[in-house]
Length: 221
Length: 171
Image (cartoon, rainbow over all chains, first blue to last red; front, side, top):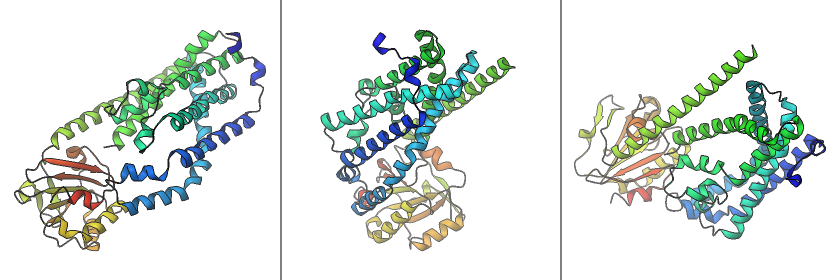
């Protein structure tokens, strides 16, 4: 347990340095996925029966020409994601009567993001090494560390895919890192902070997940 | 004051969550009903460009029917219309029912632009009340529902679809 604990010193990093490193690694991951996992052939295999070849060619060209957009958007999206977690925890603190200043919580959420980044790296490495990829569905259906990997399948309604994927090993690691960060910065017991994370960020995650399910059920067939 | 604000925040959160959950349950129910309803060609009740009513009794007996939900502004739908125009012969023994929520002027322009307005087996229908979504359970543009001579659903396609994939089902 000692090896797992964090000290205040661990949180003396410069936010923007760590943010830059995490953003860079997410960009690298996105580039790797786009070039080594989602190969052009997958689009033909997935859509060839329904969509004309020349239209798939056009889609691939367009996707390649707009690839830079995903890299440019990465820092903004990451900032929103970390900011959302920090807002949820700060608001949770406000409701539960615990002082949790946004600036400090943001630092904790930024550090905890490493768990989710690790999840992305491990997931992609396993996908590359262990999964036979012939169609895009092979990628979408690969989630061995999540609840989807245990109970999900082809018969799972599309709108349940996201919630089943959200509950995964790395997300649980994220909760623990958040709780450990709050314990360190606010000198409270880990158990109490874990409960606080579940009651604040957990509710925020629930709202976000329900929102995504709402969108997916309304926008898909 | 802090307590009141905290209670208000919780109430706001719960109402937002309740709204989303109610929306999910409602849409899920509607979609399940639509899947059951669309196994056979459902009741169509739309207006034509001429203003006349178009229903199932307007369809020729014992002929496949393709219901196409589209929008004149959608690039995929414009491409599909161009392809339909090129492959009109493949639709000879079927009826193509094109439904859109766009206004009659936009639909008339679209029909004329792709040379489909005067085809006797192609009908441009106006869905001004969003009835298509309630009947077919989708508002995805473009969508195709292909029915055989017995008016049974053969296949539905969501998103852009090559015309050959549709016409091979109605030959």
